Length: 169
Image (cartoon, rainbow, N blue to C red; front, side, top):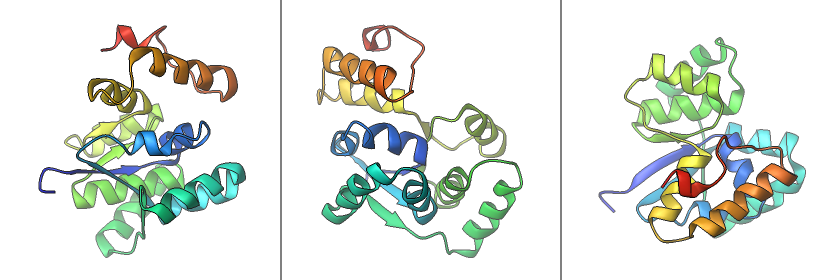
């Protein structure tokens, strides 16, 4: 698909959808393909064993694709980024997205600030913007989005700064 947007997802956004078993929802936006780097997969493996099963399933059925950071330009960008204090998953996702001209999905505010300074043209998605895109695409409605938001806030330590997605769409 010529107009497909490739999104490299960081661990933060990925985990938000894995913890509620909704990776399929995240990847259902038409015209988008979501990729994870080998470093992001390693972070999930190391820190989120329960979500690893869901990640492996998503990779097996092809709704997520894993890529390896091996290109010399990506490795060099990765090395420069790790020196800034960002996490390994963030650095690998930023390096690949910037080198390949893809979008990136991440929630960390410091990482988004660094991206704005280092790669100002890089398209940045967040968990919030992905849910808004799901609503706008008619995949879920505001009530369903608010139920997801409530689940994240009550059970998974992820909070959004507004009361309802109705305020955002």
